[in-house]
Image 1 (tube, helix red, strand yellow):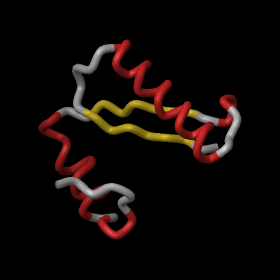
Image 2 (cartoon, rainbow, N blue to C red):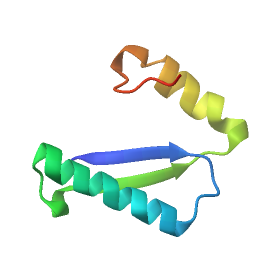
Image 3 (cartoon, rainbow, N blue to C red):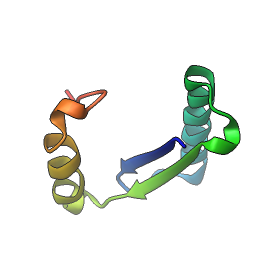
Image 4 (cartoon, rainbow, N blue to C red):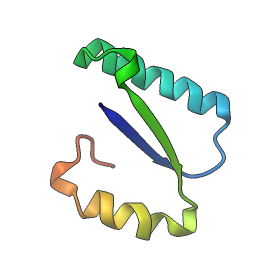
Length: 72
């Protein structure tokens, strides 16, 4: 705990995802005070054609008031 899920389009390199995972982990440790072994991160690659149904409608529009950072 905590578990971070990053939904993104396919095509980012393993290095990019590793750097982002490291940045999230460092932030969680520094800001929330968890140990490194408590943090897990998942990259969920969603094809652009599926983005609306799998991400935008359920996770963005459907949880608009819960978003910590809104698009736009």
